[in-house]
Image 1: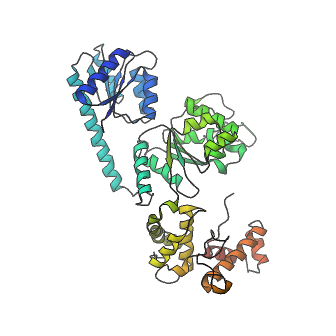
Image 2: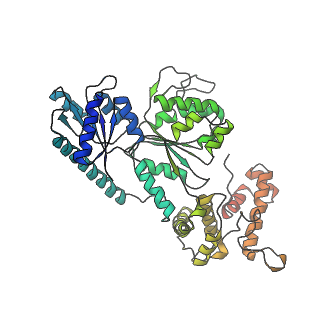
Image 3: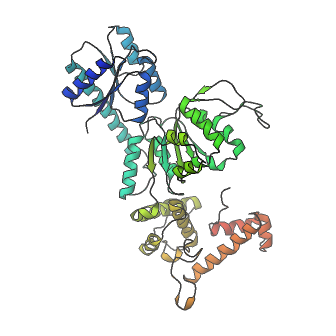
Length: 460
């Protein structure tokens, strides 16, 4: 693919002449920006391979652009050019991160040569980063299906761009893992990664969690607190379940995204923030906009780039890899040795639809199989009943004569699970009260049973 060069100059005829010559002599693609603000907007939206930047411009000059690029972690090689011939100013630009400098009077052949040198250095740095990534821990996004390969390719391309990304996908597909990969592969990898579950915060605390507060801002605010934007600083802020935000908070979030500043609750001084925002939701935000529950202007700010995470049922070939990974890693948390998953068990797992919780549901299923198994491998007999069939029936079809499907062990496990879960729900998940009602010795006895049955209290 031909590389894209951005030429930034307030003298548009000169910039367009540079663009024409670079396309003719260097076979590059080109774009032209008439000032610093327009250049930064292009850099945050498009993948630019190299930029030729004028230092002397009204408004945001070349130095301002270089400082903004450093603050926003925009990693694009820059060649500054100037007609003033002031050597000291060019050296200062290099100190601010420019690759090199040229005079506007230089012949275009020299300009093409400098651009190629800058691109070559950028490619070498990318190659070094790639080798470091190979030496680093593997991606948590497991799968070799075509859908997952496309997703990983899109993540690698978007990771270097600082503009917002909207991650869409059903519950349990791994949207936070995608956000983590965008951060890990970005120039911000050494900065903070801050995750906020917008659906898990009470409405009265959302403002404080996102934007921070000063001491005395509200009852209980005994000391100042930095919000998520400040904690993320120059890193990545992941806003999970963005569709759950109240309308008023949506408006304030929009102002932060547009202005790059937050004001703590109870405060007056704006604080500059440079975090890259990655948002995620399982909701159809276009439909939410139609219903009036989500702001259209905020959606436009968030969906500059969109990543769709495929559900597990659309990549069944990845189930053996995922099941093997969970079977190898989960036992260590329980103090047990890893056990392989038999082919028969894999066949049962592949036959399921996984519509309730996707990869998270598969992980929980493998954990239950580990707890239920006693042999050297996880077999089909250890696969728990499929909750997606008939509201809790077994994975196998009903037995002849109208009996319940599944082995005696599976039916016993399902019955125990049903009894304990119903008792917990009836008692508001109070462990001690439920233990007494079930006639158990104490609450620890119930906790052991819950652990064996892999029963967890629902979130919220």
